[in-house]
Image 1: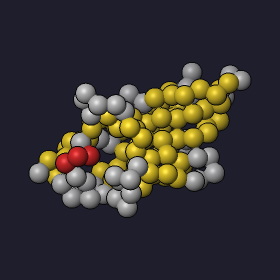
Image 2: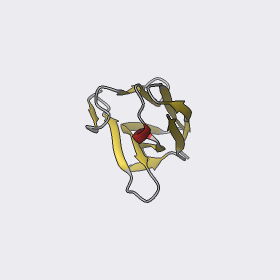
Image 3: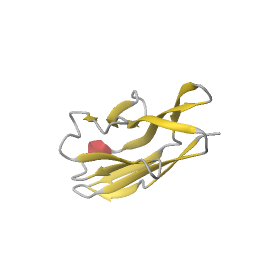
Image 4: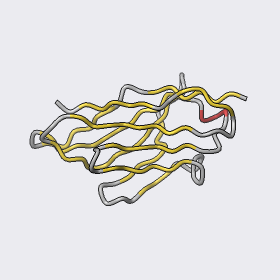
Length: 119
């Protein structure tokens, strides 16, 4: 069974930084795309950043220049470095990983980690 384990959320003041991590555990899989989404209560989940297996990245306009997504293929882990955090970055952040497992592509979601930015 393939699972995702997130870590790194917490409380930070405006202008501060946090780094989120999401590790993929299990065996017999390969990883395709990795991404981070976020969701505020009452709103739809939105894409924050994504990175392909080839290392190409894309970002939501609201986080460009402040957030950086990266992946460590040896550790099957994706990171989200968040700098210059703003109040509006407060949300539950979810990692999203597409794996090839048991002869099919499967989309996995992490359990979510809360990021709270305070003034």
